[in-house]
Image (cartoon, rainbow, N blue to C red; front, top):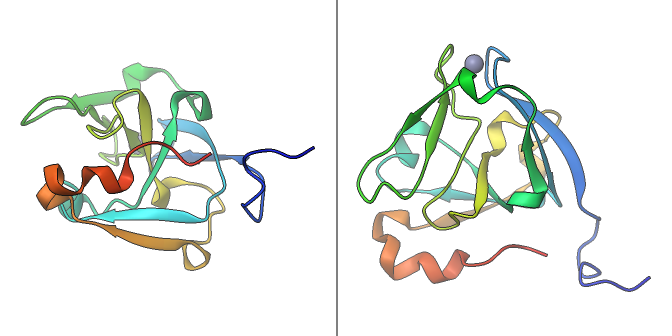
Length: 137
Ligand SMILES: [Zn+2]
C-alpha cells in the first residue's frame, strides 16, 4: 500500500539500546538513515549523535528510577542520564519537548558509518531551530 514513507529506502524498524552498564534500556523506531551532530554547550561536551523521534516511536524498558535528571538554562529539556554509569542514552530535547532525542551511539547494532551525519548549529539555537522542526515521517 502507498504511504507517506515511500520516499524512504527502508521502512521504520525498532532497535534496542542501552547505557554503558545496562541499567537504562530502551527501544526506538526509525529509518536510521540520518542523525544530528549538535555544537551547543552540552552536546559538544557529551559527544551525542541525535536521533529525534516522536513519543510513539520510543519507550524505555527499565525503571525510570535508574536515571538522574539534569536541567539548565530554560529547563525545557530533560537531560536524563544513568545514575550508575553516567551515560545519556536519551533525553527530552528543548526542540521537541513532546518527543525523545536518542543518543545514536547507544543504539545496538547501528553502524554509524552507514548513517548520514547532519550538522546542527545548536550554539545559535534560536536562529537554526526551524531547520530541525517536526519529525521525519
Ligand atoms: Zn548505566
